[in-house]
Image (cartoon, rainbow, N blue to C red):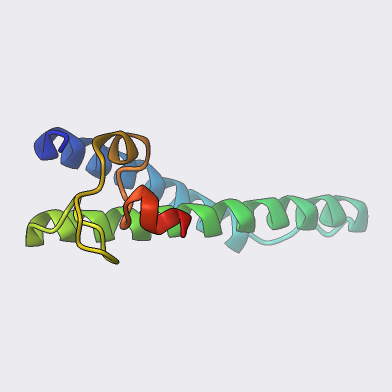
Length: 106
């Protein structure tokens, strides 16, 4: 099991980065569009990319928040499906993992 204190600090730092990103993206998406139709077309394409980044950032933030709650509950590192310990290598690679490798594969 990795050092939960260090993992928590890393997750909280990543969460702060993601929440700032979501705020910036939301601000960019709310700004009024250009009146020139060609510029507006480019802005709409950019907005599609921003919406994708926003969705991914929000999903990662939600997974991190859930991992932090599991840490608080003392269930961090325990597979949500089978109850076995999630391997340290998996948690190093994906600190918000909820399942062990066996359950994630099957």
